[in-house]
Length: 123
Image (cartoon, rainbow, N blue to C red):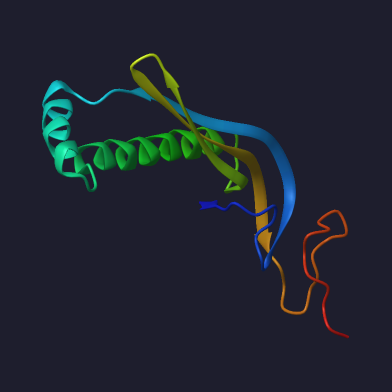
């Protein structure tokens, strides 16, 4: 499964657009993480407890987005983005994009005209 931030996948053409897909989670750090991070913040530097929560959250929302895309029959997600925001003491994480079906271009074949972001071939 491809998940790219671009509107196309170089070397492939989009044959079907299946619509927007997303993965969401709302997280909070546990008491131990908050306690440890509170002490760590006194000295400055990275708060690894929170960094870990963010990495785990991003991975989780990507997995959920991929699952939704696969359930729709997609083999790629284009224009993928992350978003996050605060909800009280919690943080919401979201990954979203457009589920598509792609197929490899044959050697020398150009992307179809409906993919204007594809670089023109040299003639």
